[in-house]
Image (tube, rainbow, N blue to C red; front, side, top):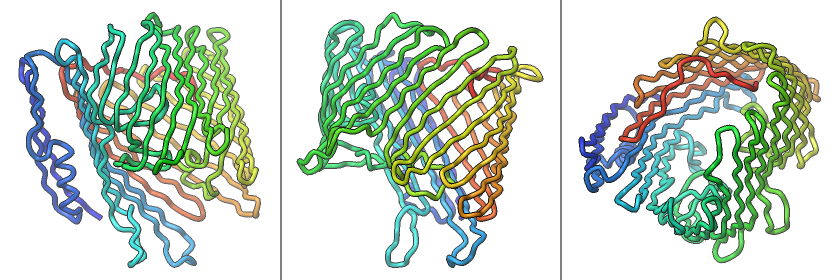
Length: 479
């Protein structure tokens, strides 16, 4: 399936900052439906021009345009099912635009729209096949008055509300600052993405509303800070309560590399239970030795979204404990010993793994790093042994990573597999505004071979300052 495309995007900001013009033209050759190209053209400006008038120099602009695709070919070596292939192809475009400091009140306008084309995303029950499917999403379209130095603030439209968890609302939020650190608020409207939905849409029969509390001191420092969020959220469908939960999130850092993070979704319908939750304690005992302990639990939906591409078990609620011990031998060498223990609630299958690894940071100069890991343990229905190694190169223009994962899996039914997973990825910063990244991966064993490719092109624009680009390998502290 071949698509040849031409995308031309022109973003112009005049010297006074008075107008922003975005012009987009497109052309195509291949079998991608013309309606899809019209959607993409609308995404990046409707084939014409978007103009946001304002007073000269009255606002800051910050935006990014991304366009990319993901393709995967899965070939089974057993032909008894009548088909040996299971392909996957997806293309997506996204435009995020933020206008801030509008007028003297410093209003904020945010637009975040995306278009996703799935080559095999719609079931054709007549032909017994998967047909192409296109999904247009408006992730955010809102107008806000943050009123940073005042008591009251608000936002209207479609907006995310991180102070109340991973949710979005088609409606309004109203907030009150009790102090410079404490905020209280309420929100309500339609629910554009329920927990069971992957995409944003217009759900006329679904409502969401609730209250939130946020504690965010202004005197936080980079190595000492404290953040706290609580919320009570109600979701209804056709007037009936679909979900009701208490949200909690805390981040407490008392010194560099020492912090406590907690996150909780406590559902109360149809009974009280933890839908998703996690606790993570990271502690630096001295400049060389540190530890990390964590516990997490999540539901079947999160399990499905995080499931390994080679795993064939049905989704299940899951909980897991982790412990890691790290020793910084010198500036370039870090050793880590970690333990993992997990269990599925559906069938009580368990996972246990021990990993010993080392990372070599900024070796052969400042641009290279490498790592090596050995792991062994039970993986629900198999006993696995793996060796993983990788090499990375980093500069202010290029980034390369090569990863190899070779293992042996002995299953309870007597089957033995020898998976090999290879991946190479690269990214190129063409300028402070323009970047491109790509990756190729091959995963194979005695049953199946999966080949996948990813490509992403991004462009940032506006008159808001862009952070500098790191030149050299990052000083990574964990494996």
